[in-house]
Length: 233
Image (cartoon, rainbow, N blue to C red; front, top):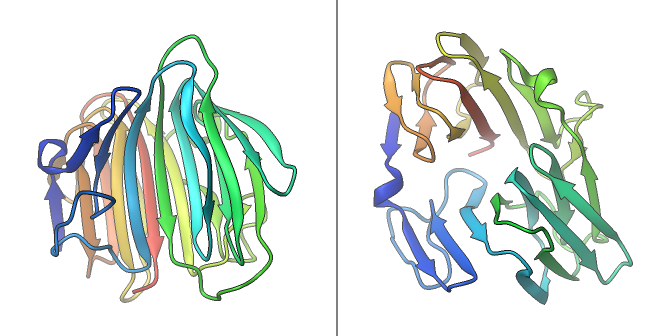
């Protein structure tokens, strides 16, 4: 089962400095049919204006993954961490027992991100943060694990949940495959370009809610950049 969720059908808000689209219910957008997908709870498509951002605010007991699509985001938190994550790269904040952080676009132009929240397997653990570059060339023609709750994914950023976040870049006409485990939930969004997933057409920034599919065959109809979450029910 693959349910296409067109970009135009997503909830959202325009705060001036922030233009947000929500794949799932979030803040002022509430849709009882879109409360999450397996352990995946939030997927926000945010455009942040230059020299603006999210001022310090708290979180607890959530795995928060930021995939930077364009520009860069500068992170600071109550643990003393500070870092700048550029386009194509990823940061993970495990909020755990509680953390306060800010995320600012200090670049001369807009920054565009996917912000993904996944429910952790345990509550109350010590908070943490980390970031890592993932060069687009290493994801050419295949899915690469960017963040993972599985020990065997040594090169990925760690998650405290039964899930993986993956990325791929495909040239027009290229096809790649991904195998889903039994009863897994997947959610796929093309950050750029249009694709077919098991024959279902997706345009850029559309979402695909996937379950009961053992293999995903993704064909790029034009040059494409993909982000995929594979999570427990």
